[in-house]
Structure formats: structure tokens, C-alpha cells
Length: 600
Image (cartoon, rainbow, N blue to C red; front, top):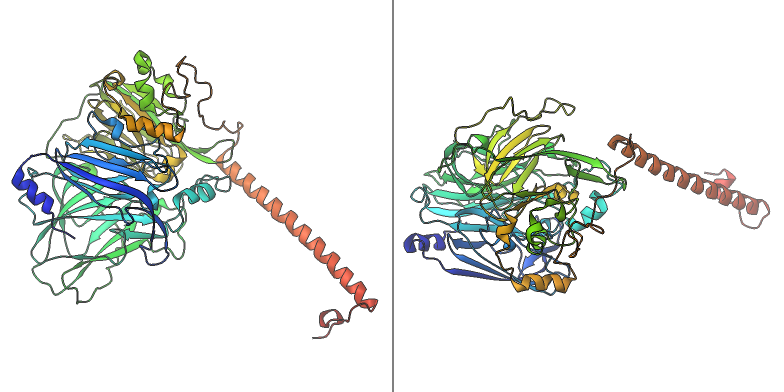
């Protein structure tokens, strides 16, 4: 817990902008955040966890990166719009090349939005290995500036003892996992530790910025004996909503105002709990509840959290922004369906409209910059990037139907969106609720806006945003395992406007140092942009008639066959050895042993 001196200074200085610089050497650091297993995590300047980035609205932020990881990396500044600087957004193969080991790279942008954000690696499955931290933008003119005394934050996360890339290769995207069961976390963390004691003073109002920086599970959060007001979600101020528990998906942020008791007699537990519906199995040793304490007295008792029989929590669909906007009328609609299935390599992939995202040879933004007037042709961005070209200032509607019996938090880079509709979950895994524009559901007068929203099992949602921020923007499931399965699409917004920019030279230098292509179409073809020969593509589909259940049966049949053959071989060799031993005994070549002689 900390009092924000930066926020206090911002209140005095108004909107006087400054430059805030962070020099970050990215490297592996030994750490043991859950006190159960020491391992290497990705730290900054020899320290883990990485530093919190803090600035005031309208500040210029410079992050000077030196990569000493021994592998490539990148940084995405989650939730920041990056107006006119989309090339600073960070996802590899979308807006930049990976930063090679031993290279330098500078992120340089102006922050023109207040609120609660975070930053993390956007290279492969890297951020679950610890490269993640809050990014706080203070606002002296916020509507709740006079309603709290202390400004602080609380991160929640799932945590793995094994490295994420190792899990990805050996446990997840493998023939041995045909159902696509996600790796189960080993633990949960509060502010990247356990047994967290949140020091508080009596009769004080705390502004707590809650951020789920995990890789898989949504989390319920409950403060025992304390109600609070939700006043911000994903950087959008909302009318205060009083509750005592919330549900936070991976990548979402909730800011709350919590007022402490007058007395210091009792320390109160607060708890985060995994949404276990998102786990395919629950190991016996998994502790999915993590307890911290609102600590009024450091020398007092720290009681166990009460048992919650049922999680009744705030539905974020009901939140109302302070700056109200009626539903936008769409100019264009993108309809996509989520599914999970196996391809002919036996691996389980994730799809939008039967296309699983495969990164192009050339980052999509660099294809925009090198394609002239052909940049408005979505086909040049590749067969497996799920690319959609958007007209500048159009209102874009995305209809997402979930043909999967799981929850998914979807994040849009570069924008917040209005949540127009969100269905309930279907009654069973075999039923689907599909959006019907002729029979719409509930639409709020002033829809909630945010940058990450979850969809319920076999349900749908409808979101809308204004394409008023040129850039190449990723839209993807923020469950890290599902992104690696390919659950992403690419929005190329106003490509001709982007071509007026100048990409910094050190960004191209990263491509050259790493041997990555940075001109031409998705295949790196600079002569004929319609020729995609050599582009990265998904494996071919399974033969007709194969299903996931069939693949599972085939895999386990093969395993059973191998085990059976191994047993037969072992048994045959064992019998041969026994027979030879008995003959030698009879011939007197070796003495009789107790077992062969029948003695006990």
C-alpha cells in the first residue's frame, strides 16, 4: 500500500505534461512468490516483480528496453489507445517484430487517457512467467478526486511453477492433449505474493485499483465486513455501484472506493477465488482460494475467511459510464463464431469462423506501410490472420457467437467498446444461443464501455466502437493459452491514414537484427502483393468424420497399444530369463535360491 505522491503533485500542477522514462533491462530473476517453489521469473533490472509504471494524464512515457532474456520479447501497454502511435502497441507480428536477445528498443508515446492499466509481454506465452505489472495514469480532474484519501492498487493472478513456454510445448499444444485442456495453475497470488497484509488506517477511504494480471482464470473478490463502490472499469469512470464482491476476468480492471472501520480491533480477511468452472480438472492439492487481510493491527489476529456458499456478484453489464453515450448505430458488422477443434496434426486449436490465427512473416502494420493503395485489400494480410479492413470513423459492430462451452474474456487493442448485448449461458453444453438481429435482447440506454469483456458458455455478445483511431488492432481472447491456440483476429483501421506515419528506425532495426521480414505481404512478397505463396498457414483439417472424441479415442488407443506391446515384450523377456535361470539351477551351475526351491 502506498500514498501516491505523483497523484498529489498532479492535483497541484493541473495538466502540465512531463516526460517519464523507465530504463528496463529485461532478464531472468530467481523468485519464490508463493513460498512453495523457487524458479526463474522475468524481472527488470535484476528485480522481480517488474516496476509499476506511473504517470499523469498527457505525460510522455518512454520505456527504454534492453533484452537480456536469451530469447525475444516485447511489451504491450494493455488498454492504452496509442492515438497516432499504434506502432508502440507491442504485439509481435502485429505492430512490430520481436525484440531479439541483446537488442534495444524504445517505446515512446503520450498518454491521453486516465485510469488503470497494465503492461505485459506480448511474445508467445511469456507474460505468465512474470513479465507483467500495473500501469497507472493519474488524473487531477477525475470525478471522484474528493472522495478518497489514499490511492493504491491490488493485482490478482494465477501462478504456475513450470514455465509457460514449456507448458505450451509439452502439456498443452500436443497430440497428447487432444481436448485442449488448459494447464492448471499451481497457486494464486495477491500483489505477486501470498498471505498479503494490506495495511489500512481507520476511517479512511482507499481507492483500490484491482487488476487481474493472470493467464487463465477469472477470480471472485470479496472483502469481508466491507462494502465498496465500483467507480472505474478498464479506464472508464462509472457511476458508483455499491457491492461487496466482484468478478474479474483476466485482463480486466476494477477501481473501487473502500472506507475502513472506525476501530482497529479486528483485521478483516479478503479473498480471491478461482472460477473453477474454467478448470477442466481440479487437483487435490490446488488451493484456489487466496486470502489476504485488511490489516488494522499488525500485532492482532489474522482470522480465516468466512465460507461463501454461493458467489453472487456484480454484473458489469449494468454499470453506467459517467460520460454517457447512447448506443452507436453500426455502419459495418463483423460476425464471428468461436470454436475449438483438432487439425490433422492432432493438436486442439481455437478458431474464429474456422480460421485459427497464424502470425504472418511480416508484421501486419509493416505490410500496411509498404503496400500503398493495396493496403485496403484485406487479402494481402494473409489467409490466417483473420484480417478485416475498417473505414476511418465508421461505427463497427462485432457480433461474437460462442460455440464453445467455456467462458472467454475478449480484449480489443486500441479502443474501448460499448457492450450492447450479452446473453446468458446456454442451458446445456449441447445448446447454443445465437444472436438474432431481428429479435434483439436487452440493450441499456447508456451501455457500459470497456476494453475487455467476457462471453458466457455457448452464448453471444454484441459490441460496438468508433473506428476513429487508425492502427492495426488485435482482438483476441485474453486467456493466454487460447491466444496461443489462435483465438484472435486483426483489425486494420484506416490503413491510408497510417501510411502518413514514420516508423522509428530502431523498430526496423529489431527486425533486421532478428532476421525478420518487414516489407511486403503476409508472405514477405514485395513484388506481387496478391501472391501469398509461402505464407504461414494452419495445418489442414482432419478427414471428414473425425471429431474431438474420435481423436481422443485414437490417441488413447495408440497409447494402449504401445503399453500393451511394451508389456508383452517385458513379459516375454522375463519368462525367458526365468527359464534360463531354472535350467542353470538344475544343471548345478548355480545354487538353488529360496523362491525356486519352494522354501519360505
